[in-house]
Amino acid sequence: MDPWVVGLVLVAAVLHAGWNALVKSGGAPFVRLAITNGFAAIVMLAPALYLGFPDAESWPFLFGSMLVHLAYYLLLAYGYRLADLSLVYPVARGSAPPLVALGAFFVAGERLTTWGAVSIAVVSLAIGLLAFRAPEDKGTGRSVLVALAIGALIAAYSVLDGMGARLSTNTFAYIAWMFVLDGLVLLVWGGVWQGRQIAGYCRDHWQQGLASGVMYMTAYGLVVWAMTKLPMTYVSALRETSVIMAALIGARYLNEPFGGRRIVSACLVAVGVVMLQFSHS
Image 1 (cartoon, rainbow, N blue to C red):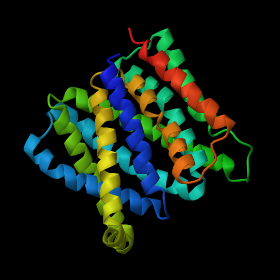
Image 2: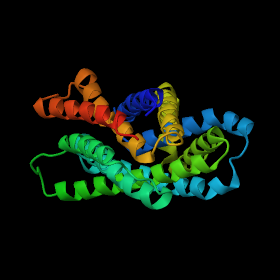
Image 3: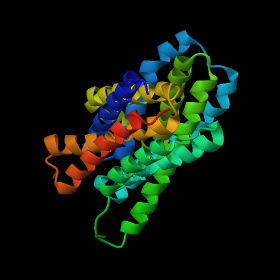
């Protein structure tokens, strides 16, 4: 695989962990998600108008992605209210790469090499290892189911955006309009249900919202672009290393524990990424 593309996807993983840390650094996760996406839409509106519309063949994927993203953000906000980040985030992110592999096989005809499949299994195992723990209450099972549903939505919008970007002769036009539509839809939805709270957050914390919005659109923009260069499954597995980045950020800045299990997970992710680098033939 092109090491430059791999490097940019890993940069995207760091940025993804960063904007999630900003979104999750306080309460009201849906409000923070709406503001993050709203700022991304505002920033990308001028480039979208300048670049023009993507090819008509990519529109069904663009609108399908918009609807799946809306469901994803609503369920993600619910998941963060229902359970700890350390449970929801690893399960959702760890379950996404195998589901992307399945979707890419049926939608795009992508086939993995044996070594590639083993590499993705190692990365997913490492990510999922962060979520294994003894049940703490009767709601743990429901939390895991919600997290798995979030992972399915992640896989769905990843495949839709990968296909949509590939079908557009102007990949960057697709990416720009993706952010504009996603952000405006989520902001309007949030305005209907929590407009007063969103307005208050914008007034008091607009710098944080802008920062998370820029990090979000840079991170996912790089991922969608990379899916036009590499198999979607490989990009998804590399991207989800953000779970380890988030654990590192939490340990360094949020005083969260970074014990033996997380060290093992980080090492396995590193091994899986190296294996993935040499698996694409």
